[in-house]
Image (cartoon, rainbow, N blue to C red; front, top):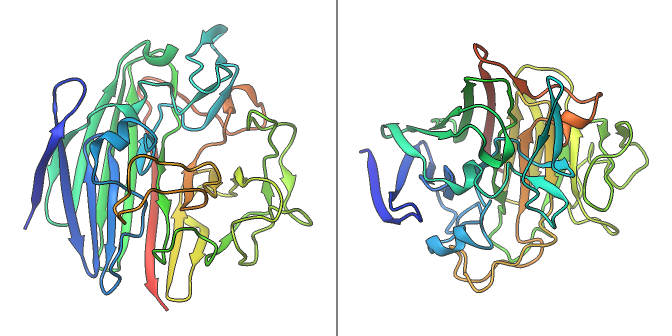
Amino acid sequence: MAEIELLGIAPDGTSIQRATIQAGDLKVSVLTWGATVQDVRFQDFPYSLVLGSPDLGAYLGPMLYFGAIVGRVANRIENGQASLDGRELRLERNEDDRTTLHGGTDGCASVNWRIDRHDGKSCRMRTRLPDGQGGFPGNLDITADFEVTDGNALNITLTAETDAPTLCNLAHHGYWCLDGQPDIGGHRLTIHSDSYLPVDVSRIPVGKPAAVDGSEFDFRKPRCPIPSTGELDHNFCLPGEALRPAALLETEDLSLDVLTTATGLQAYNGERIDTSPFPGICGRVYGPYAGLALEPQGWPNAPNNPQAPSIRLDPGERYEQSSVFRLFRK
């Protein structure tokens, strides 16, 4: 039976709802606030497999991006500047007054989406980011489709259209923890990529894609996502365009297979997580390494990197990204 619940009131006075979808052994709850995957339950496992909170206040504070759809440009843009048709865009610098992060403070993670369609296995949410939001041109109409399949997969399809040339790079920003423990030290991560983007102190990619071979970012064979040195918050370059494997996350009991059509996968091991004073669904505050973010998306800072696949979107075109998060018992 289709289920929609009223949870509270958004800052703009609209009602925040939670839609629950279920198929096979998988049950997923999605909030209209930020189109956020709040809770993922797999039969016989007595905990959520994603980081989320029962407190809506958490999503207005330290858990702003947890499980949300982020954009209109996911990840970072250097100095809040980009060029489009000879016009220099001055974007909101909402991260340390240096970079534009996830489209600015009024990006699609910070708005209350509306439920357009909902049944027992799927739901569709929509929102519009207005012309000028965060400094970006064009009204951007975004649709997020969430579907749970009998094969225990969560399918997320993101589409967008614009009425003026703009930039568009959307991502699902979910944090995964498959064993219910306080950190992901018991996980093993495989990323199906031969190259990644080195970054500077502002986490902006520098130079050309680098080979993972011989580096601490070589995840072609499974290993712990908490590195011995440095932070994992990097884009891995994914060859091809069709839906194909991007990553595999494993514990002793579960595995999560991630497939996507996106050109990149941002992997962040949660080194800076601190959700205090808000507890998660687990009942405790999340701390460092509490979850692993696996975010299919275009390359960060793409407008300022001639090597990056374009994230330009024009009127009459349709942005589309499909990703699959499939769970298996071992």
